[in-house]
Image 1: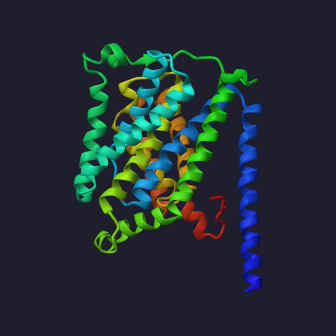
Image 2: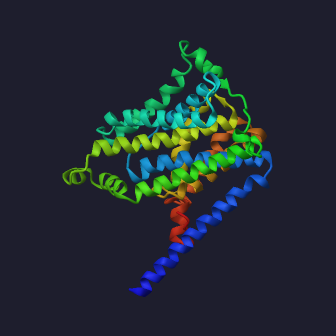
Image 3: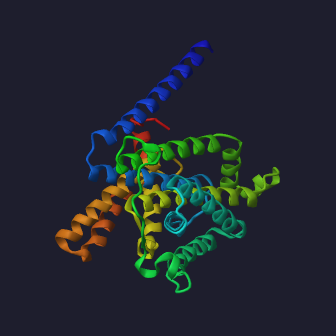
Length: 329
């Protein structure tokens, strides 16, 4: 028993050391990377936040969403409206976007929690298709910019910190990712996580043991929407622009692809999937530049098929199976 306890303590210490080393490495990136590389890495972190939230919903709760881009868009537009029209600080706008998306996700999840899986997928698909059209409506055009979208002014770094705007935004995004990753780990490894997995595996049995399946499903949907909204808010701050065309159905499908490639039901898979999405985005851009836009989806589909066949359990699953699983979360 003493030997087992000693080994467990050593593994825990190694895990903490790994996390601290990775955090220190990531925190040093903005001081050595160029502006364009920093912009790309910030996008990776933003994708990781969105994928983390979607993985909580799909991988741990078992609910399918084909329209999570809608919450990503809601977060982006909330931030743009508050910063542009109400002169709110970017940090407060980010917080407000997260709260608004949690409320929207929870309210959407209440009736959706009673739907079968196929109907839930259809409802989320409809949500993702409707929202980009809503922001283009003439009644909202004054606020949202309509089809043309709206630009955000780049503000000064808050608190007079000695960073450039790109460095500050990267460090802010990294801090938000670490915070939300810790929150997800604590939720999923505790009583709430056990209840959510019980509902996923056998909802009638979970209900028989007194678990309120509707409440838990709605809460998880709200949390997942909050993660997507925070990611959308950070994306709006990063590219300084929001428009309906950015948040189409392809965004929602890309997020699903990201968790499938990274590893469904794995927190670390969110980061692997984020690197994949950023890489495929760069590859698509290079393909469009050299071969034309007609070949972009062909290359995207071919790469996706190759990855899915080679890694049916995602990157995290592949590393775990081969015994080289780099355990950091």
